[in-house]
Length: 415
Ligand code: ATP
Ligand code: MG
Image (tube, helix red, strand yellow):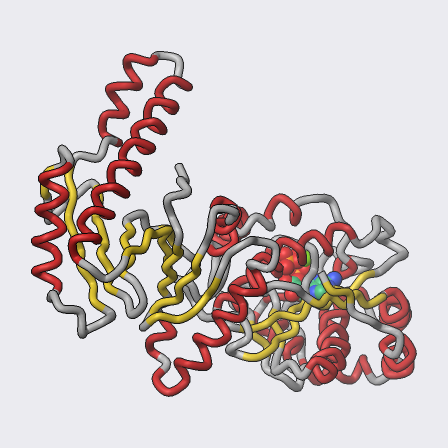
């Protein structure tokens, strides 16, 4: 599908345009994020042109890889592979026709290939006729308002040239292909195949959050959602080596998958067995889960301080499990001194699973893994915890001593 006639990529972002005076900051962060993501891909230049970001690519640019990378960068609403031409209408006409012919030829080749892959070639060939490009529309845009022709005139002139030199017909309401002729500041860009990005805001523009990552289905999705809103995520995972000695591969591969959206990520793995031993010795089974989770926030807060993070992310979804009743969430969240963001709180399990599949964390999340949260808790855990009772029970715990010793040795891994 991808041909090396392309020499530019045009990137559009949406919400950034709402940011008024902060707009240059958002644009700067987005460009710097794109640069980091394209680290291993060859290209010539990246810059801003009007309200767009332009990447100049060359024959050595791996287009498939570039597409895959750009599709996952928060802040990009959509992008196009484009060809450029000097800002001269004659030349633009010629280039549009040339580009279009090549594109149509490749499109037909793809249709034929798909048809031949099917068993019944004749049937599928007629089915695939629909994929053929027969009608078009020109959509002129002018970032450069000084360009000598106005949009309607560009539409008319380029349209005429396409009509004369191809077999395509005009259909302004429902064209098979919409050809954008975009007069930028440096060049005119011609493009037509829109590739959707994930939208949202560039990672880092919102500051940092610490995500409590469990290895289950929910917390990776929650982390993704906050990245999409511009937060840089630092991951913290609590692990009880005694009940789970399967190594850290699963958690690391989850973080690696999530790094597709935010670039390199820090992961802190905190040994939890000593804390759990202390809790199991002193707390009745039905309250252990609540206290495990309260302690997790206290420890995560030490990481947040170190990382200058402004809050936490969890995968909580209201009433999904016992720790997520309104009463229990109230008691658990009360142990944190920073705000907690549970972006999945109003989502159904299936909706969360669908998103997990989409962001490709699902297949890792369902691998067997013993989460420390479920260790020695009651068959019928408390669902209506009272803060006063829980705080009273915690008075006997020697958590601070253990925390001081263990947290002093914790170092993050960069993934
Ligand atoms: P998940 O699918 O994210 O594990 P869950 O529905 O299984 O969520 P719980 O196991 O009660 O629910 O955990 C609720 C939240 O607590 C998780 O989404 C996660 O943010 C945090 N959490 C639980 N266990 C751990 C852990 N071992 N390390 C870090 N965070 C954890
Ligand atoms: Mg879990």
